[in-house]
Length: 398
Image (cartoon, rainbow, N blue to C red; front, top):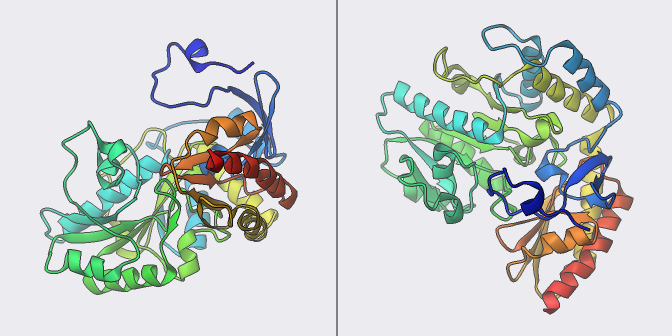
């Protein structure tokens, strides 16, 4: 018997189209619902559960921190902030970090930073370049930067100060910005997670980096979904050999504990001053410990190399088993962020997947998204394909 959300959550706002199951516990890449049914987790809380569930190193560290101090206030120094900021900036080759609690907050902070950067230069109406298919959040600011009309509809008037262009077209960027003295930055996702897992090409990111340098614009990279080892490097943009001016992080940074950040370099790291931005919960001792322990465990267990290896195995297996099926448009991704694009909307597969004991998501209507914990084994990856293949075959035959 499945659990009906209408029955068990009558006092919760209906803001999500939920699959009618209720999860109770997890171990590794497995989850169990309140009725004892087991699921293989190929979603990882939407790229959040970096270390899977009930990790034997992570959980004791979090329990230790809970017993010491969960929250104080940013009125005071939080030692973990400097420790985590050092870990992130060293791995990103950047300079300073600001901590918040979510990806939306991180992107909102990045937008504010870019606007302040422009105002400080005498630009009264700063403009940020954003992209088709982009998703940066659902606050008024980040929603205005987001492309999806389903996200934006009904919440106008939206924030001004954005121009939108197609991805991977440097000439389109040059044309859209030509003669505009108000441009302050270019904001992009190295892999557009909610937009269908479309990657920015390495050459394109290099071209944008050069154009930003030439015009004194900030290159702002939203790595909320693609960062923290998801692609096999700490941050997806590192495949292009570039360094952004501003980078937003969240999701996998805390392995399930809410933590977000912006990391900045050079002049961008000095823009926000006392009073310009802040947060009550951001940078609290518990979330900082979660970030620190996530990075420590990832390095101890060599999860970047593991992600590259298992991700390549999973992608190859998907291409082998699904790639030639009529109706499969593409199998794409890097590391353990993989999309299978179909030729028609496939949201119905979420419920069917749960019935088959497999958790994943559908993004941009037609793309099956796999973002499992980075601890997933090759055997578990094979199991994902074995459970997913008949679902896709049956769906495409309908």
